[in-house]
Amino acid sequence: MNTSIVGKNLELTEPIKNYAESAFEAIKKYNLNIISANIVLSTTKKGDFSVEFVVNVKDKHTVVITQKDKDLYAAIDLAQERAKKNLRRYADKLKDHNKIGIKNLDNGESEAPIAEELEEEFVQLELKLYKPLDFEEAKVLLDDSKENFFVFQDSDGNTRVITKLENGKYGLY
Image 1 (cartoon, rainbow, N blue to C red):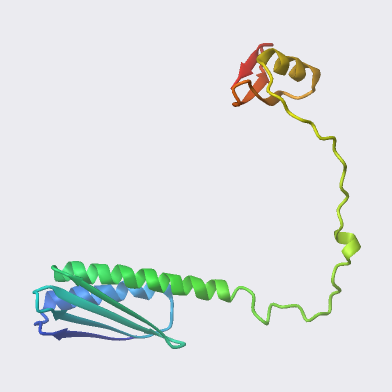
Image 2: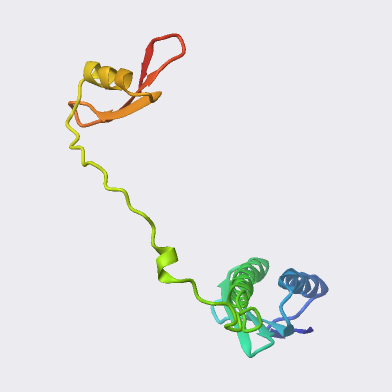
């Protein structure tokens, strides 16, 4: 990966260069074929700092991030985070796109499943109209069933659950 740090209207000191080079290290972890990465540091007429982060990736993908801030180091950090986010999205896109390739496709040798095999048997169920129940009615319905709990709507329209407890009592939620 070719890297360059350029200063426009700005003197590049060693600490600034070292800090900008650390930004390059952060983008290497995505294992993309990065051809070159450039950082252009400059000052604006208002006295703010501008950081332009340009990353050229194989297959003609270029990431350009421009960030302005009153602090040069903060501008580098923000530009680095935005570049990392953009490269992470690009890497995820490449991974998702390449999951099913031409090599992984079937040659058509296997037969397609027959439609009859895909049909599922449906069982007609009796439609029960649920009316609001009081707690005593729900308790009777629970006792009549083999289940451990019963879900019902109370007279206020709230969904409630009544359960059989181990000690023979009932729990109400």
